Amino acid sequence: MARKQTVLKDDLLKAAFDLARDEGYQEVTARKLASKAGCSTQPIFRAYANMEEVLAEVIDEGAAFFEKYYDSYPKIQQTPFLNLGLVYISFAEKESNLFKLLFMNEGKQAKSLYELLNGKNGNLIKEINKAKEEGCADPQGLFMRIWIFIHGIACMTIKGDYDLGITDTIQMLKDAYKAFK
Image 1 (cartoon, rainbow, N blue to C red):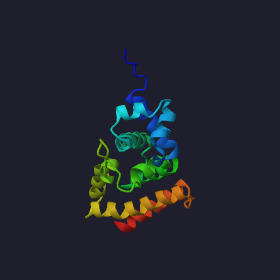
Image 2: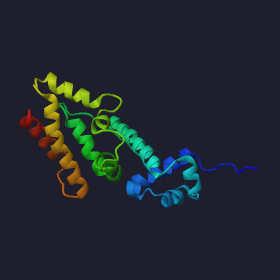
Image 3: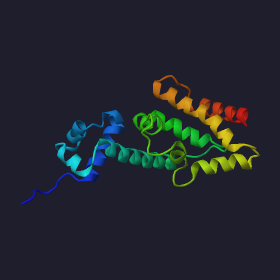
């Protein structure tokens, strides 16, 4: 009689995601995943062809998590790209391992930066259109310039080199928007 499978693919994915979130995606190894899921490595390789496949699904889960994070973040700023930037910086601060997985993952991304920021709701497109409505002649170019600034702040946050509060950050982003516009 065949043994009943007790560790399901969903259980493995949840364990892999939790491991990536808590310890970093580089720590998602077969042995650590098996330990976290409470099984041997055998169920992992029954469910997945290899660990790259596991990581690809973890990235998809991370992208969905970021989108939920974006959706739940209060959007109170009127200046284009500010809400998106504040969400991104906050995500880097509060979910640094997932931030590294999604936005600093040296070519292993399953999704582009555009896909991650735009999400299913067209978040980035809405911000670009908002800038265009405000009279910006090149809203995509403006986004690229301000995004370099926003990404720099987020990376500094992860490294512990950014200690400005939310009020100062908002003012800096507003100043950057005006300067780049």
